[in-house]
Length: 267
Image (cartoon, rainbow, N blue to C red; front, side, top):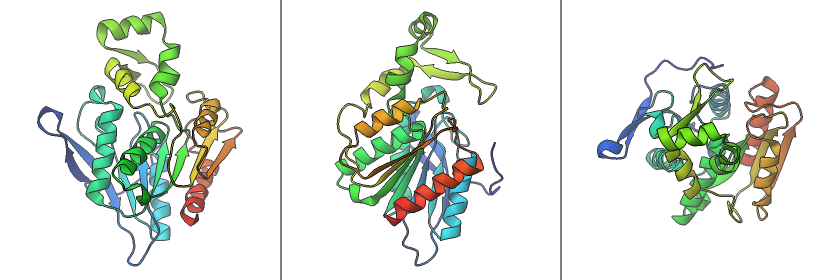
């Protein structure tokens, strides 16, 4: 379910050049004058968009505290241009980094949902490589799905799906979240191998709060526990929600998410 948001035309940013060019839609809430709280940056999940419940509630929370908030749609998602079938982690990471560079927040908290948690971890690695890791004040990861293509999809492929990938370059999978099936391309899976993060110690240099539903049918909570094993040097808190699903969009889930954002901001 999406909540009502402003009907104003979103800001846009062109990323890439030539045939790789795509127009990214953004909604940017500026901080109130004199507010020094970190900006909140929403990183959505696979096939999600910035009009979803959690994203909108995050902006409302930012507005109430006077913080800046950045929401945007990856290419092929929501209001952004580009074909969804062209999407890869490298492509969506490039867009995320471009949005952050364009808006230019100083300190920020990355709030990543599902695949957005993977994007957040890759973003931190890229910023740290540029000597800008200090800009990240914290991470809030909601049902994080790092390396989901190699860890959660590839090991469970059926023979029919493997054949479809080889012959058609993609396979489809029904989803309970909408009428259209999920599409996973060979390009997405191959690119995912180049963006894996669960291969060694992950250095974030900031506090991390993970929220994970134990009834999540898409990202089992054992995957979140695996992620924690790769974050040994960080201040990491995990909240396991016994009856929580993958979306974690119920009012009580939203309350937990926003409390985690405030705790990370205070830390």
